[in-house]
Length: 447
Ligand code: HAM
Image 1 (tube, protein in one colour):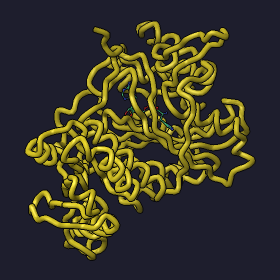
Image 2 (cartoon, protein in one colour):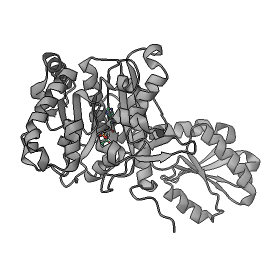
Image 3 (cartoon, protein in one colour):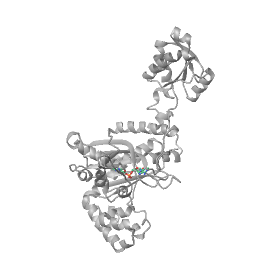
């Protein structure tokens, strides 16, 4: 028996429905925010991630899936989405051809060779956004508002927004000096990775899982104490905008992020849910003003974030949230015998193409079993097709909950279902979108 690779998982049943619901919500939200859908390859030249994500990050040094293709090229399965979108922005010359800012969203699988555990996979899905060409701190706040609104719309209550600032290049350089001074006297007592990080990129020492409890980690200088005036101003405006967006946040100096490209604002949203587990960072992101240039494009500012789908699903489960998943079909078609099957499949297709969700018996069940199947499928209506129906062009339709029976001419079927199903659309009729009385699942989310 061949099994799935370690750190991967299959999707089916409830999880498939939840994911499909979340994908629809993300698409609608991105349309409302006016972000554009991007898709980049799952594998890219390895160099992109070395340059983009950073050659001293754990992701690149320890976790990439690398391979040499049949043309002897070094390739890597993408460990995250930002580097690929930046490459695409540069390669397609969007800095010259597109109106600024360019606002992109993406959703797809990422690959990291990590030790699997709850909320940590080797193949996982990220939804993310990237905004290019806008220095305004307002956009940092807009980007932070996206995951916060997603979590709110899904009904998650236990979330905590942590923000911090690394400042611009000058501030980061000053901070780097301070870190070197801080760790230098004791660096020999740190792990070999940290010694290497000390030489190449001392900021990465702060993510070390081995020396995590060393006293010097706790007393390390804080980035916000090294911000120059310009960077302080940027950060203040981000906070001001978050307040206007009614987003509660905590300034948390320990958020420095595990990727090299950040400048100014960085943020993470944590699941503040009891017993949620170690992988409680639901999403993370920030500004990366030097990245486009580092990857080979013109100096262009950038800001973005990505959230992990699996951790989001875990949080939904931990908070016992039932997503308003539309389950069931509008119509279940029952051919009375094999003779009516080809007619039935034609009619089923016609209804489907008119916008109804329709299923049909393809197992030649007995009539009683077919009614049981209609229950299982949660069908609103059942349409029985026998010889009489075909000869008269008048269909027999049953409302599956009231058991009321209707005779409807074939040419009136679409109007009939339109009318009957419209009534079912919303439990509170015309007032649903604006009135406070609406309790239907769909509109509860909007409020
Ligand atoms: P990241 O913090 O490495 O940032 O990943 C973002 C999110 O992806 C995490 O918060 C987590 O939810 C999820 N994630 C990461 N690794 C795993 C894993 N092994 N299994 C399951 N979920 C995981 C980035 O990737 C940046 N590209 C975010 C960004 C976009 N910054 C600016 N723009």
